[in-house]
Image (cartoon, rainbow, N blue to C red; front, top):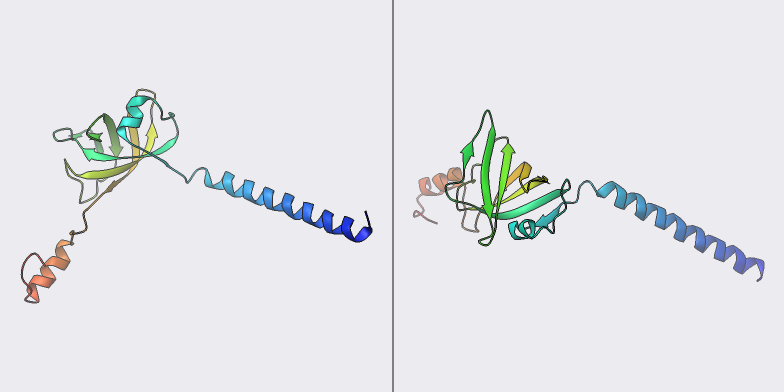
Length: 145
């Protein structure tokens, strides 16, 4: 192999190794910020690993909301097939209601309960904040617009 090709091959191998190291560091850094999205059915099936950050989506089961000491709240989330118990220590979003869609982010415990550190309430495309609705009505537009 002539010296020019050998030098070019060395540079290419060096770039590939450097790129591999950079991708590895990026993947390692992102592993704590990536949440696995699961449903209550996935948890009931036992396919979700415990002690790993997850996001669980579903509907809040009617009548399941129970307030504990301080800011602790317990409720159940369902995908209309399975139910998973959730405990959350914090202030719930304004749109949180029984029977409405939510996404909770947290950890699955050994006993199948999700300990949430964040609760996100979903809303449909027709949602309008009360302040905006009042301003529109005050401007003379009909209700419900």
